Image (cartoon, rainbow, N blue to C red; front, side):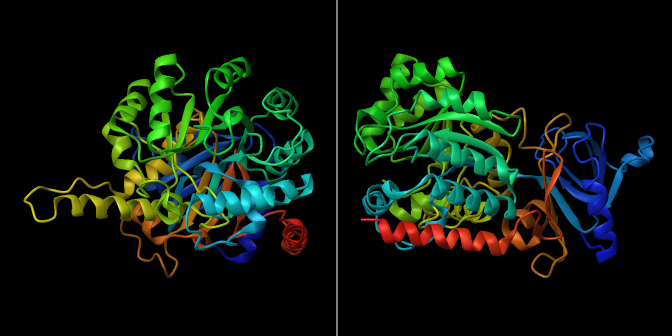
Amino acid sequence: MYLDDATRQSLLAQLRQDADAPDRRVLLTGATVVSMDPAIGVLDKGDVLIQGNVIAAVGPDLRARGSIADAVVIDASGCVVAPGFVDTHRHAWEAQLRRIMPDVDDLAGYVTSTLLGIAPVYRPVDMYVGTKLAALTALDGGVTTMLDFSHNSRTAEHSDAAVQALLDTGIRGVHAAMAPHFGDWDKQWPTDVARLRDQYGSPLLTFRLACLATDEIAGPALAYGPELARTAAELGVGVSVDAVFGPASSQSILTWEEAGLLGPDVTLIHSTGLTGEAWQAIGATGTTVALAPTSDAQIGLESAIPAVDEALAVGVRPGLSIDVEVALASDMFTQMRALHAIQRMRAVNAVYGTEREPSRIGVHDVLDFATLQGARTNGLGDVTGSITVGKQADLLVIRAEDVNNMPLNDAVGTVVLGSDARNIDTVFVAGQVRKWNGQLLDVDIEALRGEVAASRDHIMANAS
């Protein structure tokens, strides 16, 4: 928002006064509203009214429709208001190990280095620091909902630390708990998920069961099947299945379909190199898919091609995810751009030398994947992912007249292809301001820097 400092400070004080009151109202006015709600679309000059933690109204010039004199009015002219991004899969505990292997050659290299050599030395405090850093980075980059695939749950204390980090940052968190691949652990998983849900569950924090597709990496205890499906059903939570790729996973998918273990509450992560029969089973059961575009391509997971065409061909609109920051970028803008470019490259290449027209996705598609479809994939489709009346007020205000965005011509194109974290002026999660004037709120960056460095140094000094 292009406001003077005094106005900004005054508005922030107003936003923080009675911030938890259910009747507090905030009006974002004069923005280009990219709703991602098919019934609303894009409003070239629109308003969004927040009441308490929800979206109360969306439309042009809401002040002309009735008295909202008690609202805190924020002039968002020159900005795009969009729903917050939704990350469907990030191993948040690894964040203090960022880019330690930027050119990792393959999955085996990552597994051997990080999961076998480093993960076993993590203390609960390291789980807390890594998860906190990942969540704050997510918020800074406009990710308002993050599924933390927490696969280093060595003890109940490790899980408590990861969950507390999500709560302390104010992000909308989904804690997907899984036991570690290697090393000693307390064998408290998966039953401990019930305790976590009962102790920490809140409107901002939900839970899922996390597991692997096959027993190839870490043995049968972590592989999805009837026992884990039954546990998830008893807990009333969804299941996120990682490392879904190749012939073995394809066979597992067919086995799960036959046993009735697929459906909308199950998310298959990556899904590269699957057979056509496996994809038919996914589409027929309404199973959700979380793509990790840079992970698939950069690490070279199975075919190394993000499976967006395969998903769309069976009627599945996937969510997007960050995956492992040890080797990859941390932000959703990179995921959208990578997928947009890779799919369009594939489409044109497939018809090169012929007269056929390429079947290309567009910027609206990848923004849909990063918002509405991500929320659905995380089991939160009725909660967030679009600017829809009644949904939670998880919103971004993106400066569209900054030097890298001006002039604003196409709002969706500006969000997907032009913007990055520096353009995100304001982030709301459930109506609460988490980023303002381009800065995260209530974060002591110097203290965080010290915590992260100390944790990283301890881990690397003790890793095998």
